[in-house]
Length: 156
Image 1 (cartoon, rainbow, N blue to C red):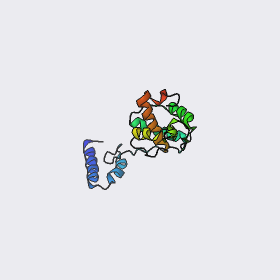
Image 2: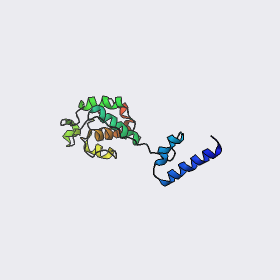
Image 3: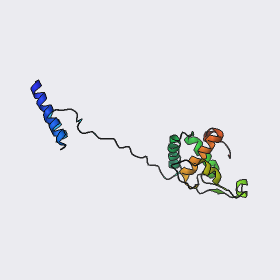
């Protein structure tokens, strides 16, 4: 195509784009253009969906932990959850030394109320029985005390 034809086409597309009708985008394929810079979209990032079970709670907690730079792995969390509560988010220990002091261990990772309050991580529930809040606070505590939940192999 010669220069006069290219200039006319460019002027036509600019006129349509300035008019704001969206017609420029529709006209571009008809004019042989290969891209539509007049119409840009912002990609939408979907929020991940987590299942309401132990796998989903661990994965959601790991996402929160990553945002707060709290170390830990799926395997380290899972191993400790299974030892502490067998995966029951409503577990409560009414017989150990903490229970004797009136502050029983609660939840998936058997955290006592003062520890949960101190190591609670923003963006999670303040309910100690909430699985994600319990896991995340416990991992935050384990990181401060042991370097990571991955280094915990017995009651902590």
